[in-house]
Structure formats: C-alpha cells, structure tokens
Image 1 (tube, rainbow, N blue to C red):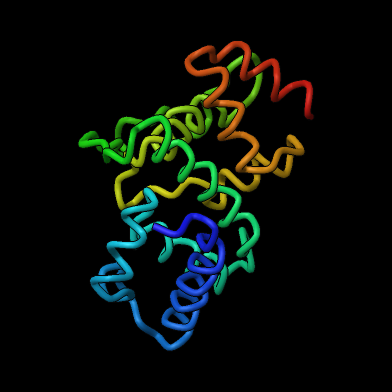
Image 2 (image 1 turned 180 degrees about the horizontal axis):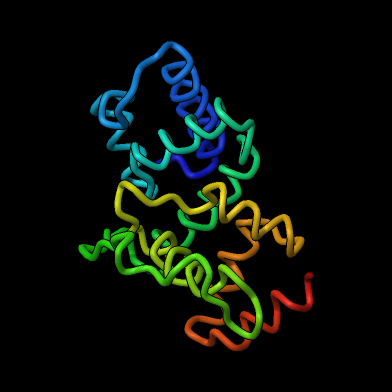
Length: 172
C-alpha cells in the first residue's frame, strides 16, 4: 500500500463514483472494479461510502470531496492504527439508533449521531446509514463543527458522551 498516494487514489474513485451517479448508474456494488474495491477495503472504506458521497454530491452539492476526504482520512487512520487493518464484524442498523428528536444536555440529534459516528469510525454502518447525511450535516452546520473533527473528538473522548456534549456546546 502506498500511503503517500492515498489522497490521489481517493480522489480518483470519488470522481469515478460521481460520474457513475451522473450517468444514471445506481447501486454501490456496481461502481468499482474488484481491484478498486480491494483498495477501498484496504483503507477501511467500502463502495457504499463512496456511493453515498456521490449521491449527496450530485443531489445536494454537500458534503463534497473535501469533507468526504477528511472523514475518510480519520476513518482510515482508525482502521489502520486502532483496528490493525481488521474490519469489524458488527453492523449498526438504523432501528438501533435513538430517535432524531432525542437530546443530550439539550442538544437534539446528538444521541443519534454518537452511535452513528462510533460505527463510522469502526466501519460498522449498515448500508442504509450514512455518516454526514443531511441530518448530520444540519447538526454540524448548526454547531459549527467539521464532520471529520467530530470523529476525531469522539475517538479521543471515546465513550464519554457528557464530555462530547460539552465540547459540542463550546463550539455552538
């Protein structure tokens, strides 16, 4: 694996996914060759992540390449250094998430975002879930937080939801 070339490889596959989506191609598993999918997997990423970025890029012009790259750099770091390149076998399903209206320390959406972000870090999101979906982006914009920055803080503070909530309040 050529670590130095990760960002250019990611850019190439991001652009390929966007072009496929624009051309009308649907379904994450149809976007990449076997070698490309293996490269993604070796970096803790899957085709569904790229499909979600392409879909939202085309439909909402958000989160965009820069945010996607920043998110996946944190995920990649976690995968390579915390998980020792070993994918998790656990999958977080949407039905396991708190309601969108739940709040922690008065911060709506945070109880839903916390398990999603942890699952993103560990590569455990079900295909129907996206970290940095429209609801997440609304939360991040409201609280002046970059999505990748949230992942980093979550990783550092681990399971201390109260400290994470305090950090979110300090950014709002």
